Each structure stands twice: as structure tokens, then as C-alpha cells.
Image 1 (spheres, one colour):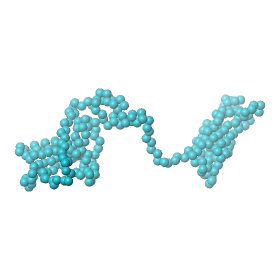
Image 2 (cartoon, helix red, strand yellow):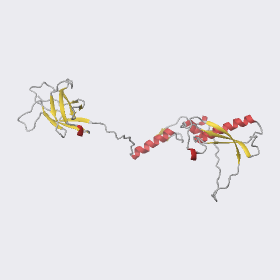
Image 3 (cartoon, one colour):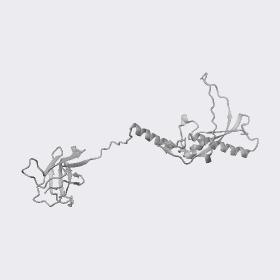
Image 4 (tube, helix red, strand yellow):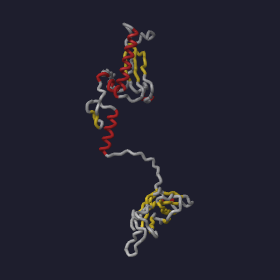
Length: 278
């Protein structure tokens, strides 16, 4: 400062910066935002340095820039930093040539930060759907909750679709209960059950079948019946057991599909129609 004392208005300037991270609620309640927090840090640094300089020290000023770590964000962009700091600068006034913008007055804006008393803050707060009940200030979780509630009322859902098709294979049976044999005197077959295949890779399937097992038998054993399915994924089976033991006989079934090379895929075993009639 002594080397440039002939310059106009030589002084110290303290510029505060804040690490690029979200403020917690207590800090935001005291300083307002990142600009207020960095300005308060710069002011405390200026006060500490001025005290060391003693009476009659050089004039000083301070400002806070918050998260903006670059001196020229228009050219260099908003660079980030994980460290909060205060920079000390020695500055002076210098006349700038008048630009071509006639009639434009540039006014330097200053901001005085009045911090709140941290001991007077209401640390206990109640909010309903993001709206504070006993505290007029909102925190970041309150804002997020208000956004969620507003989207829910608007009936808008955000989903991620990676355009990946998951293979699906399923089979259903109807009815759920049949007779162990048909009654010839009746008009309808009481022992008939129909199966329907559902899949989203039908073009890769060469043939399909339904395999029926006793409920206590492993699906790797020989099935009681193997019913081929037609090209539309439909099949039907008529039970024909010589005898029946009450109360029911429980079976299970699964669908197995094959490609042209003989590779197969199958569903998990499902409870098959049982036989409650004697």
C-alpha cells in the first residue's frame, strides 16, 4: 500500500466466498443466504485486521460473493470450490474511459447484512405439508414437501424409462375347480379347464405347452399331463382320474415355451384346479 500511496483512494478490500454446498436451516436463518454468510465472514475478517493495524489504519471495505468463486463469471463461468475463504485485496480508484452507451448511469449497489440472533431462533418447528404452523420461515425440506404436494394435486407423475423391455411370461387357468371325471348325462364338461398364455416375446416362441403336476411333486419329475398350446397361446385339458379321495386333490401347473433351437423358458408353478366333487 505504501508503494502505491500516490494512487487515488488506496484501501483494503476483503471478499468472502462460501463453499458450494447447501446451507443448513440455522445458518440460513441467521445470514439469510450464501451472500449474507460470505459478507458476514468478510466483515469479521476486516474487523480483525483493522484491530491489528491499530488507530489511523488504512481504510477498508468488504463484500460477499457467496458461491460465485470466479471474479468474472461471464467469461470463466461459475467455478466451484469446496473451501470457504476470505481474500484480501489492495485496490484503488482509476478513471475508466467513457463507453459508447450514452445516457446509461451505472450505480454501484451495496448491501448491509443484519444477522439474526442465533439464540433467539425457534429451533422447534411444526409444519403440515410443508406449511409452517409456528414458524414463518421455510426450510429446504418444507419447500420440497410443498413441491411434492403440489405435484400430487396436479396428478403429474415423474417416471424414468430406460426403454428396456423386460421379458414377461405368464399363464392362467379357468375355472379354478373342476370334477375328476365328466358326467355324460350333463350338457357341459365338468372336468374341462382352459389355459391361456401371456408373453411379450411371442415372436421368439416356436412352441408352448402346459405341464401339470401333483402339488407334492417336484416340477422336475414326470408331469401328470403335458398339453400343447396352439399358436394363440390357448390350451384345454379334461381331467380323467379313475377314482377320487375327498376332500380335494390339489395340482399345480406351469407353462413352458421353446425357441427354434430347443431352449426353453417356463413360469413359476401355480396352483392348478382342484377336484372338490365326488
